Image 1: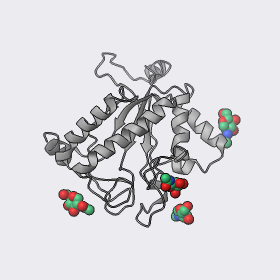
Image 2 (image 1 turned 90 degrees about the horizontal axis):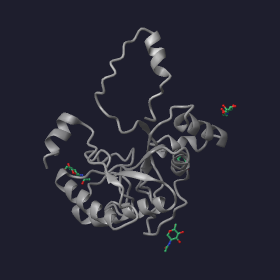
Image 3 (image 1 turned 30 degrees about the horizontal axis):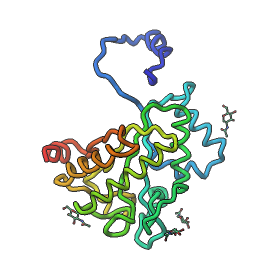
Length: 237
Ligand SMILES: *[C@@H]1O[C@H](CO)[C@@H](O)[C@H](O)[C@H]1NC(C)=O
Ligand SMILES: *[C@@H]1O[C@H](CO)[C@@H](O)[C@H](O)[C@H]1NC(C)=O
Ligand SMILES: *[C@@H]1O[C@H](CO)[C@@H](O)[C@H](O)[C@H]1NC(C)=O
Ligand SMILES: *[C@@H]1O[C@H](CO)[C@@H](O)[C@H](O)[C@H]1NC(C)=O
């Protein structure tokens, strides 16, 4: 297992801890999310960025086995946009419907670092559909509707296929992070997806991915934020 440093066990024993080595639960991976700090770190010197990547991903550092890449939703300079600079991520899909794969240099820098260090689990997560798709033309503050699901699924497939074909081993996609919060104040990227539409998105996305270079990408669903007020009442739907 990548995240378990064998040298730690004798140290803990010397400190008087007792360790029950009966396996209890298997952790697939242990990691960190690239939301939203790459936007800040990109302004630091290249050497600092390289050192941070080493701290996170190398065997001499935390040796994380999982990394989440934040797929941005900001398609261009609109009046109607996320107000916190650090919480706005450039999307690859522009407002006019074309793709520009040179965007989000900040996020892509650390995504590529994770891949170069061979992090075994890479997840792409999405807080909002790009402003090209959103009904309010913003990366925040709207409820996704059923008619947008096919175009959103096709967009996700296009993004995943591009990065897989360009050397990123993406294992999972989380298509709607925190689906109950539309971020009405636009302080951060976000959109809501009503529980009644969630199964439809999962099915549409699965079908879209199955016939693409992203066919092996698994879908993480759904990343509701709260157990008692959201997950328990919403999961049955
Ligand atoms: C980066 O890491 C190297 C090697 O540990 C160290 O020598 C150097 O001072 C670090 N650079 C910065 C800017 O922290
Ligand atoms: C936000 O970004 C814009 C455009 O790059 C810049 O003009 C502005 O100073 C930034 N605001 C803050 C608070 O950093
Ligand atoms: C789309 O917008 C981008 C950025 O403004 C521009 O560079 C590009 O030429 C546009 N493409 C089309 C087909 O309009
Ligand atoms: C989004 O949906 C919620 C829950 O149905 C509703 O309260 C809210 O007014 C909607 N907001 C917008 C901007 O459509």
